[in-house]
Length: 446
Image (cartoon, rainbow, N blue to C red; front, side, top):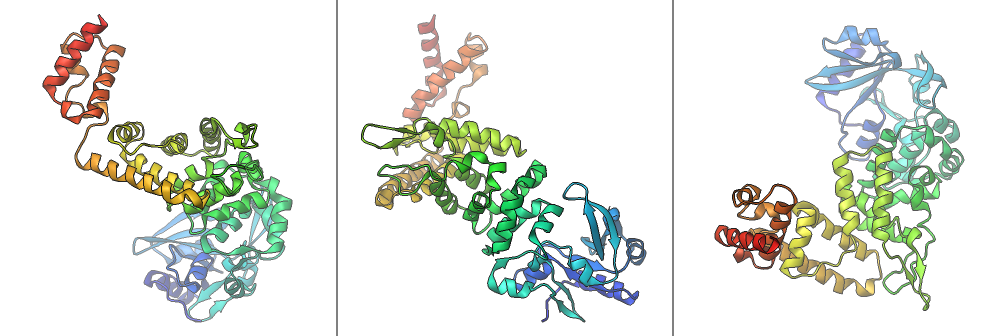
């Protein structure tokens, strides 16, 4: 089998081989090439020791010498080159107690996580596939190299990586992998929040984001977002829903455009429902105030996962407003625009559409028609430059101070009252009118 490689990679392989050593492309680059995808980067494995690699190239960076890795810069691109190694014992389920260099490529490939990542390629030698990676690609299955439980005890993040590869590639997990994750799931508690967040993010922005349900099915979810576990099996039991809360959330995630903020919002938009469940005299379930509870839980979850503050803010705004029925008339649309801003407003409509697509299809057309009408109204407001924030008024706080207003709450309250009028009638947004109206409001207050 022939794999097309970049000129820079070929130069590195040739340089190492001319010095009497072996060199192979390994891991994801081989997998992606076989699957017809362009690799985002290339990792190279060799039997040359790090110091020997450094001696062969003029520009190197010591990125991981204690683990046998040197980064070689070729044509302004960095390539990680790692010496064949085996690892003996792990002190913290990630970092090996010792790294022992080996001479054979096969010994190096044994330590890798999944068969699809344990293939190597060299233009002269061709494809090296000792663990059935090609077959597993054809079968579209994620299978570990060796004993799954041992791989996961070496680095517990590999359990999340298994789900991530399933989501990114559209593969299924091998039964032995599922069984091992269920047995080892508690070990994920030893992995840093940052590493967990990185993998969950990749699952959510994959082509198969609903695969995140595998976290629930394998037991990983209880240690990452335990509140989502109780959503599965929480019956909604009203005419607008045909799924329990957990399945509804999965459908919403699946229906959401590929945007990380949107998909996080979809994942957590109803996480507060189990805590808000009530049943009326007719046996109909209700979840009053679930948006507030969902915001509270989501805020806690995202902070524990160390997500950045700006993303947390945007996700919480979307969750808080996901159930708001926005009237299609100009004033309600402007008020929501003021709460969210233009960018988040459009994302909110996409979230609401995904939410509705995950409900009873009997009511979908009507709900989509209303959302599309709100979208059209929003576009009209923006295109015409109609004011919906105090910053859009043709008067500001400095102007009010010159009119005798006191700094502080009086100015803020006055601008808000002026905005309420302008939102209803944009033609009132003139400096003359706003000055006269501000004076009138001040006299009334006095």
